[in-house]
Length: 62
Image (cartoon, rainbow, N blue to C red; front, side, top):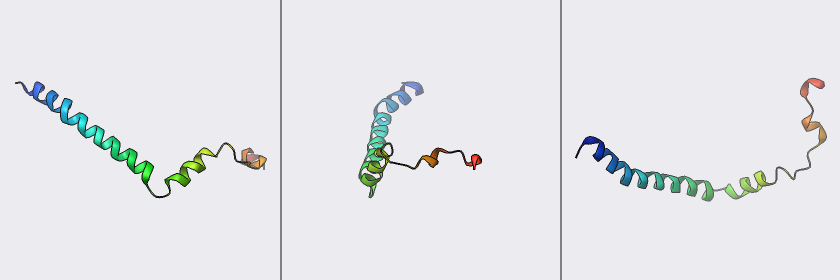
């Protein structure tokens, strides 16, 4: 077995498993950390906020 074949065999099996575990840890951390629900609700409601019209005015206009 050549070095290429050995590295490919390792990447095909353990590499995929490692990336899957890493992905699941990242997703779990984002979804289940304290305060995640409030931040997600806040981000979802950005469009519905009734901001004053001067928020979009250029600061150079005065």
